[in-house]
Image (cartoon, rainbow, N blue to C red; front, side):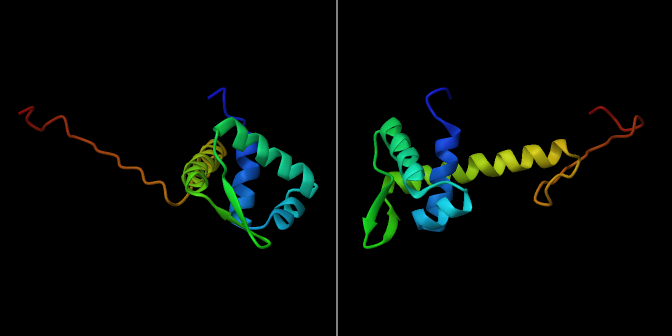
Length: 107
């Protein structure tokens, strides 16, 4: 999707899981103001506020919760892709193989 900047989505995802801009910025080696700007760019692109301030805490809006659900799916799929390509599929991935003998009836 060319309209979505996945770096901005990653920043949003980190802040949403931390619940705190300062902690997320520290974990990502960014300044708090730089991270805030990136979140604002994502909000502008999406046309919705993703967080509401409640005191010092950030709380997801309804749009933020929807975005977080999708972001979780996107980044989980990315982790599974990289793990599979490295030859170490994640444990949650199940493979079902079905075989048939040539002597079985085709009906």
